[in-house]
Length: 158
Image (cartoon, rainbow, N blue to C red; front, top):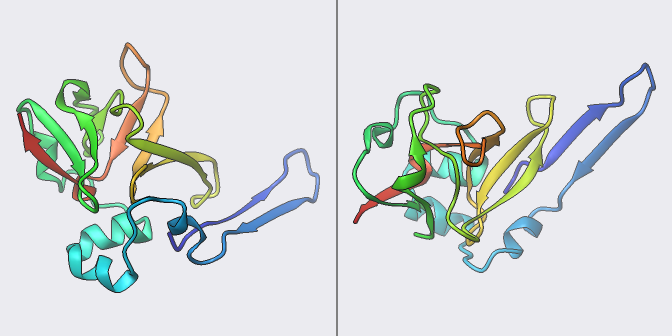
């Protein structure tokens, strides 16, 4: 991942700033599936590369996976790790494929301050590819909404 910076001001008028930068290559080294940047660029479409490796966000409503309603599994477009079951997919009305729960040990999370406030980023546990974000406004039983970039996934029918 090439964006691991955050800058946040402490509240209450306190003049304090925290700046953190992960060294290049440090995040990638933690994942079992590794490719060089050139290999990622060759393997992925330009948009999939931007999302999975540079943490971009696809345009809302642009993914065909929004309309995918068959039974099956959603896999990481980078390393083919199974991520979500179709049984946990729901229409969130956001324009991105949404799920209320990932498969066990399929994803990891980290704090993301790119927009100036804290969000929880979701990434593939196998390759570290950026998938989207998770929010606490989803349906029961978890109350979570895993809002994923469709270009970061592929669907495999049951």
